[in-house]
Length: 297
Image (tube, rainbow, N blue to C red; front, side, top):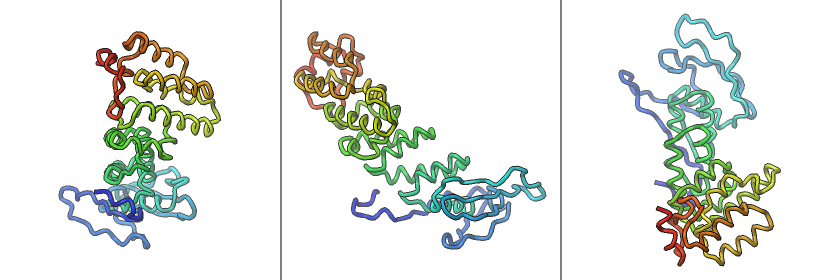
């Protein structure tokens, strides 16, 4: 159950996978402030570790032999570059104790480190924690990470969350920071709980933010997402206003607006992909929608 909005995000949950078959439950040592002594290779599935300084934003982690009598590897130290101290400590905690203390501030960064260094069990713990603590402010960042790291289950969970409270999500900073490919994936959903006119405005704001950050024209950064906007759902008066606003930033290709006008003139979705004539869950009914129903199916 998610904590109330007023609850501070400083709580931490200890995630501990069940012990492996034949292995008795272990009691984790105190962590932090003091690190435990390196366990033996038989007790630590990741092999004995020798820790270097973990000052500043990074740390150096040396991996010893995985089996007694095996020579140490020739390669240099395991380097966690540009890692926040709390994230570094969480990774080390997992390597020593097979459990990890997570909070909403570090969970996504710990997930990044778990994928980068092939720590699959840690990755699973991060995914479960993120799913259990999703919020409106965090869900877009979590979706972006899930797509980047191929976490299909987390992608589906984030998309379902966005579909349930779309109007609030599109106003967040995380929404404005989505990549064009991830935003396009969100816009393909029929279950977004927002009207199309509001969605067009949200994409326009996203495009202007992306244009400023990337230093590229608005039409260029928005080329992929605007293909998923369902312009035939707009009423003629709304479409006329949109066309007027579009002259300022050229967000939407002229061909797309023309196709929407044509669907009104012919009273059917002629020349428009069927999915663009299909109302979403949050689409407000308009009189002309009855002419689009047969084409949208």
